[in-house]
Length: 234
Ligand SMILES: [Zn+2]
Image (cartoon, rainbow, N blue to C red):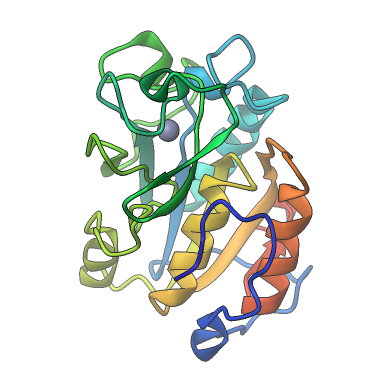
C-alpha cells in the first residue's frame, strides 16, 4: 500500500505499469473533446487568510480562469469535511501537522479546514466555475481523508470520477489547483493509475512544501509519466 503521507519512498509504486506519455513537454497541447480540466480545491481555506493556507494559493485563480475556456469538460473538487473529521488535529487533541495512524495507515493531522457549509469551504470568490459540469466533494466520510479526486486515502473508496470521465470519452486529464504536493499530486497519480493520460499545469498550482513534499511530487510525476506543462502551452 502506498502511504499517502510519506514524502518519498515510493520505490514500489506500481504506476509505471500504466504509464502513457504521448506528449513532449513544452510542445503546445490544444485541449479537445477528449480532455478534461480538473480544478483541485481552489477554496478559501487553502488561500491566504484561510485555515490551511497554501502560500500564494490565490495566485492560481486568474491562471485557471484564463485556461478554463479552452476545455469542454471541467470538474471542480471541493474538500468538504464534517466537523470533527479524522484528519483534524483537534479531533485527536494533537498538534497540527503531526501524524497519527488511522485504519488505512498514517495520516497527517491538519488544522480544522473546509468544514461543510463554512465560508472556508467555499470556492475562491474570483474562481470562474460556471462552466464546470461536476463538483466532486471529498473527505466527507468522518473517518477517511481524501487528497485525490479519484480515491479517498484508503485507496479503495472511489469518488466515482473515473466512471464519469470515461462515460464522456475523456482520455486525458489536466490538473490544476491546490496543493501541488498533496491533492494535485495524488489526483494526478490516481489519474495515471486509472489509465488517463495525465498532465499537471505547473504554474496553475501552488505547493504547501512540507518536509520535501514538493520535490517528492515532482520526482513521482517524472517516474510515473505525468507531464508537467505551463499554462502558456495550452
Ligand atoms: Zn482536507
